[in-house]
Image (cartoon, rainbow, N blue to C red; front, side):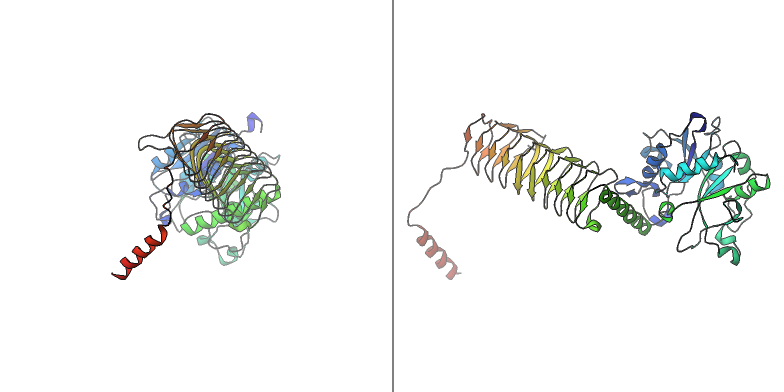
Length: 452
């Protein structure tokens, strides 16, 4: 967009959402690990708006704190007197910003950047409509307001469902509430909105009637129901999560990712998976995960804040925690947990291990049951394991400690001091064999049992 046509954006987020029955503001409830209003703002930011104003009311501190890094301005709606009244509260914040104004809702987070651009472009078309309304045709029209057109995209009338006639309620084209409006005229039109309606509120859609009366030609553009679905309850939040996940799965597969059982895989808002990766059933991605080309994430694995290298394999039943990087062609097996660990290319930790606060060199092999003892009750400490080192099963590496490259740690060892490169370290009690004593032990044990 040219500098002259950069939009201003208003996001209405004054209602806390009583139907959520929560102490958390409605627009801060997460979808795919990210507050719903942040999904909306991610799309808004691609427009490079001149100014974004968020209208807040009750629990405003929660919203303002959550969006502190977003660079938004805030306007306060002290009384909930309708959407028109809410937008009016932005007049001061938008003073001197006369570009097009895009009006969105914080609890309608799935509107795409393409749809937003389409609305703004239509507003700037040669016929100067003054107002562009985003309409949609839902399967169940419920209590949505209706948009009555003149047969083309020109709006003849907009009416709330509670105020509509039976004939008007038959109209399939519904009002999402989302608008793009000529900023030079928006507040003049809002000043003329009254509250003579069933709810006694100042409805934003009434500016369409006022604009038509003054010679403007408001129009409607159609969007998908999926984009404009609002979230007002926990059930609707769950439905939005399912909708988002379905879209993300479709996108991943379209980009060359294999999902063995798509409906069981749950992505985060920022998950990145490259082509030819394979994701098996029941994998959950937390925030901050990237999966390299050709990697395999096996069933029942949980990942968060980590990167998986090309052609690496993780799982099944693995837990990869924040700060972990798994190198190309490395392998992390079943019931292995890693935290804040760099696992080098081709390295292996195949079974039943905890590796935390560690650097593991290329092609090192960590045996089953190995633990890096990284916490001493007061602080975390680092374990260094060199390239091609071999750690025997059931070993405990007490950090801070370094195992040199190509070193070997004998199974069952508790390592408390550094092991030089190429050395073998064994740290366990000496084995004693008591010849012929096994039967005598069994006899004593049986007598003791019989005498109980």
